[in-house]
Length: 396
Image 1 (tube, rainbow, N blue to C red):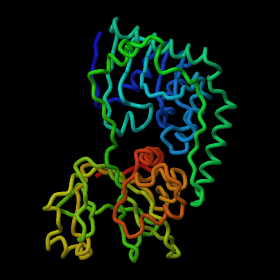
Image 2 (cartoon, rainbow, N blue to C red):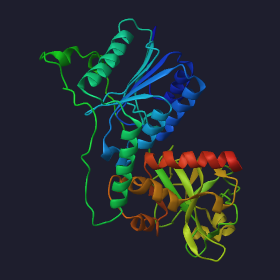
Image 3 (cartoon, rainbow, N blue to C red):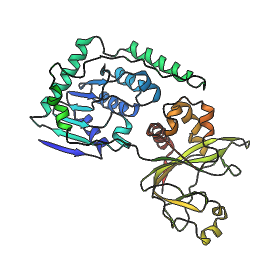
Image 4 (cartoon, rainbow, N blue to C red):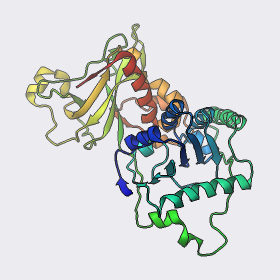
């Protein structure tokens, strides 16, 4: 019997619970991402005896903005999960064999279990709590079932997937300003008939003394190379590793001090050209974490003498950890494809907006860095992991 507070290592514990579940996995989460769906599906393939039941939102605007994934629901459904749709859902609850529960702020997304600062309770074999959470889940599914046929089907998911694609296509037109209100799911009353029901809500009682905050870490896209000195797609990227800093550094314009803090995540994108000398959008070649910028992080005369370009790029940050793909730049991740697939949800400043692809493409010009969303990070990391498996990586 135990109750443990978790504010890190949630993902490793979740994977362990997926692997050790013997009979059932039950999830309530408004948002679901492809990465997390794939983790669960992989475990379902390994043990087909575990029954998976999920309660989530089925709201078109969520899918369009990328905060939840219709493709993830499709993958879970095809793997045999029972998925129920519920409107106005906010609860996040994970049950394993009804004996272990995770309860807190984390959605079933990459942000919830990898990137955001979240708080969860891991409750194991607590006789006064676990049965209450099990009953809450089972009663909720019964209420949804009694309200109508809100179990997702192959046809429902396919139809929604098509509608989302059509909306995304329409919103590439800058003259189209629209927000979808389409939503499928049970519309249950928020409270029971008795006026004091909220006071006796077991989940609210468990969480009543917890302050749960959700916010994203800073994720940077850092460009290396100049417009008049681009890197060829047919060569491998080489990070800047001066003898003073064997762990490598990345440099910023002399005219602007970088607003980088300790632990910020960074992707390095090479400013590129093809073999005919034509400019192409940068390719993401490496990833890692940075040490924060310090006032002393300015190139010395000795460093400038060894690397004359540092006159214009004298500010720098050290890598705390960094790895890059061991392949030609042209075989790495093209930013253009990221923008095509992730769209306006690539950047925090355009999240949820209808920004034409051409406008998104132009945002990197004359910039040393851009902020990325956790949604973009999840997409890039999946691609990076695939390339790392195919080509290998070099770690500083």
